[in-house]
Image 1 (cartoon, rainbow, N blue to C red):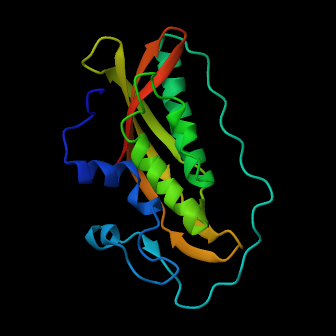
Image 2: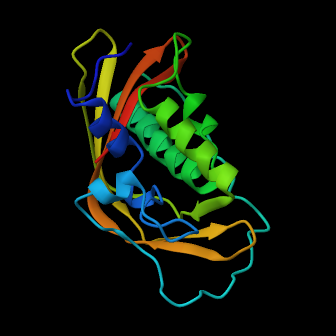
Length: 202
């Protein structure tokens, strides 16, 4: 198992990895709140009291981001960190955790990836998705990760406002924007490609 980015309880780690403001917990189709939502300190998702008008379903899904060349340089590590953030955005918008799972090392999935996969699989079964336009990276710094070959990228990102829809186009809920969130990426260059060891969103 890769070293943790921070020491924290499993529950706290899962909450951060799933990015609570995009987890869709504050009200389902039945209007009830989940335990995760009731324990959240920041009510960031709103649901209209009026019946929302259906919106057209997406006719074309966004394409997954293209991986950058695996250069063992500061620029190469920064490019991979940006690629991970773009892949996370793609995963959220398409209920497709493989965008991050495929970046994991051969030894096993990245820390945080199984939780994301479970969450997105639940959304898929419930028939809804987040029309997420993608995070905006405001700053990015990379430091040694404390283990041979491991680097940690810490990005400050702005998460834009987004809307969650059911597959028929009906609005499920609105997700508030969040500025200045932290996205951490733990990476390692394995041969000719980078692997994602862990990620965290806070």
